[in-house]
Length: 116
Image 1 (cartoon, helix red, strand yellow):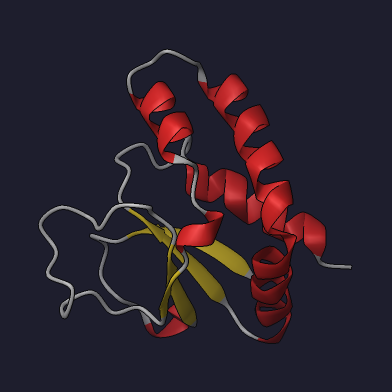
Image 2 (cartoon, rainbow, N blue to C red; image 1 turned 90 degrees about the vertical axis):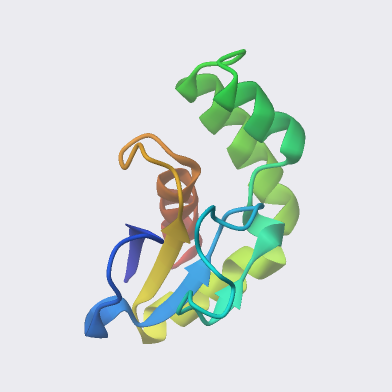
């Protein structure tokens, strides 16, 4: 199972393996304070794509299309996390305020598509 959660939300016993999937460290959180098992920068949007989306140069559907294309170049890390999600819950941690339209949701869908 793959789920998404904001880094600012409380830790839960059913979070399982917690993976930070933001390229930048979340504001206001000390590194030793964030409960996480891994910081996976290879599966985050590129700086250029992230900046284009946040400055509204591109819309969310366009962002999703480009981000999925970037993810295809990181199949190895994707398959590793997707395989882990078959064994236990994987929680993707992100800092974005929009809980519905963010890169973690796109990543979760992509990871789910990698599992048989």
